[in-house]
Image (cartoon, rainbow, N blue to C red):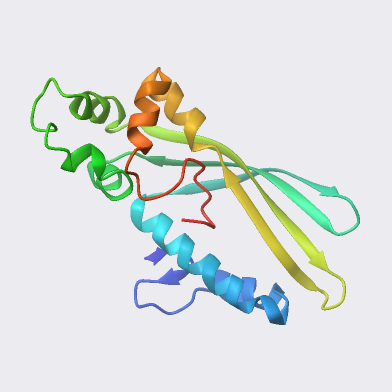
Length: 168
């Protein structure tokens, strides 16, 4: 089983080796950071499915891909990413906001749209930079039905409002 770009034993996967081989020599640290962030993201959220929907060239040295990322919202994933929903002193009450929000999210399948951009470095003939962004906020708004509950979910969350898998 893998977590991000590392197997459970901590060894890099073929995907990480591929990413490193394409990265510019001065950007190997960025490839390692990417692997670390993917590992955290996939520990928070299990059964992550990321699909490339479209790929297009922009400019002379960049391509951008449109992605769809999805995963189930389990009790474990909610506790990992949004501990504030569980460790609030009012969560014990079935009438609390935390309880209501958790019940709305639990066992739902979160589907998020995003993009990933690769910038080519002609000097090294390798990828110079990778940018990635996923819109988690809109997806949560669709599940929760109001911006106040979405804001409540992110208050005290372990990560920022845009779920950038390369930044988790």
